[in-house]
Length: 570
Ligand SMILES: Cc1ncc(C[n+]2csc(CCOP(=O)(O)OP(=O)(O)O)c2C)c(N)n1
Ligand SMILES: [Mg+2]
Image (cartoon, rainbow, N blue to C red; front, side, top):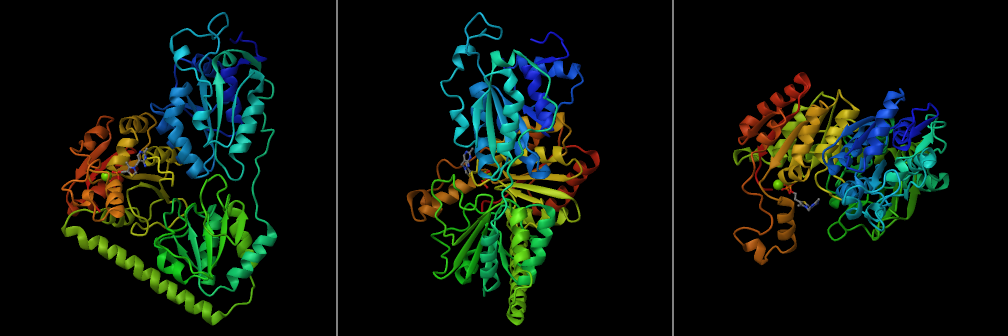
């Protein structure tokens, strides 16, 4: 407990002080009965005029993790999440799986129930002190975190947080976990050194020049080069340079299961999301930060093709099975590797006529693909609203606006027009659903002027703890737009059953078991409970008007909005 002495501070307060010094703007917190030293320490630090991050109440841990994830996607800065002992941590574990899968850094912390039963300040006072004790609490997130540890002494706070922060932000980035025992948090620690800059710089992985030279040689000589890109290309400058370079060299860029935008959907080299036909023809394939670049059973790679894997962890060393071919593997941040590759190819001799012909063929093909997709989206309007129609109309409605779409079994990239860096994010390949709504909230917090749109299935919306997310949007004044693409089912699960057993009992049944979400709640009421502007849309002809009305609300009234859109099953 603090004695008010200027030289010391309660350990709980020291944590916030150090986090701010490390560049953390927000601590997304879900507290519990083990939080007194955290809450007391925070208040003490405020009283002592210490510069602190904003500590915000997030009423569900999964939302806290999703917000830290979304905040990072827009700001590039790792944030902190503070949860309650083992029970809070287990609710946040899916968020840790998502962050780890996407190399999103964050500092995850949770309390440890008191180890002592009596006789020490902070010792157990209520039965949960016994009920929430674990032999190895960190094990709940150890497999997904790059580093985990337990705070032993209060004077370790600055050093351990510096270390946690450096490891989280080192290539490949990812979440880290520190557990915080209550008795330790109750102790006092000196303030010295808590507010200075970090003592441990993160490691930024840069590409091996000889591997770059080899890759440049191979790509420059390619007759049918293909890039498959899932997690973008780094920063905004690299995004622009990549687009110019792909066009200059006439390289096809495919966005199969892209969770970030690597290239504008309107770019003449963006061949869409289907790698199949391109992979069959390609002689050199660049797998640009892709966990699963294609579907091995469906998309065969030409036998003679060479494959270059590029990314922060190009062969995904923490993934148990991932045996995609890799003739050259280049580790490093894409924002460094791509410019190095571009520079290494600059001035290489090439067959100008062949390059020009390739460029032309790509432009025609990408134009045709876009046209077909959007025409098909419009053609079905008579039957009702489809995900594709929502995608097409949302792209039009967002034209010219600084915006980001967070899609989770929602809108479809390519039908949806997306042109700018950071304008598109899809649920992580770990697929821990309930991600897109909180991610959009976190993104909105990071960039208040941006239009942040979560487009998600009805199942995904319910996984997001919607009442919690709407409460946060109101409390933090985050004017996100939520579009529920409501097919009243877990369509992806149904499609998976019929895909695997096309002629099976389930496919022939009147209703496929374990996939229906009927009766569907009136989600407009869920949003309205937190005073959001909300409407239900059932007719295709009403959708453009509803989209523009909702966008007007989020932009002009700065209030959250929701459209519950009835869509046909795919
Ligand atoms: C946390 C979690 N639980 C379960 C699943 C399994 N799952 C994958 S897709 C899906 C259905 C998603 O439904 P919805 O969001 O409505 O989209 P739809 O497929 O209907 O378009 C489920 C339940 C998951 N990925 N994550
Ligand atoms: Mg659904």
